[in-house]
Image (cartoon, rainbow, N blue to C red):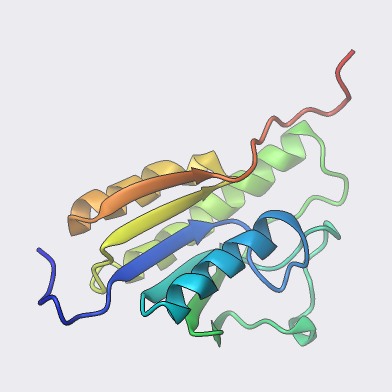
Length: 157
């Protein structure tokens, strides 16, 4: 059940990448979340430590914290495995580590009762948890495929 109509709409974004990552999915997800916040939405993001495009975890001195407010968006970060040389198995471990570490953080948002739970792919492995949270809260679940994850280790022949 949603609160009175005077309440700000609540959106929870669950995705692997977010600002301060300068390119790709992280940049676009942050712009979307911040755009919703400037339009009056109450937005929270559950994401990973910044690591892309460097394929190594950025130091905290690079402008991020485990919990922070960025342009009106509450950002909660989760640890993850970042492979030194991203190949098939390393990438699978990478994606699975975020899925596992983000579960308890997602659960902390249950009492907040988001109206919309938006799962951003990559990673599709997180979509079931986002859907479960949405169903538990009576929220709308939305899967946004920003990029496909194929896990190829060599180019097409």
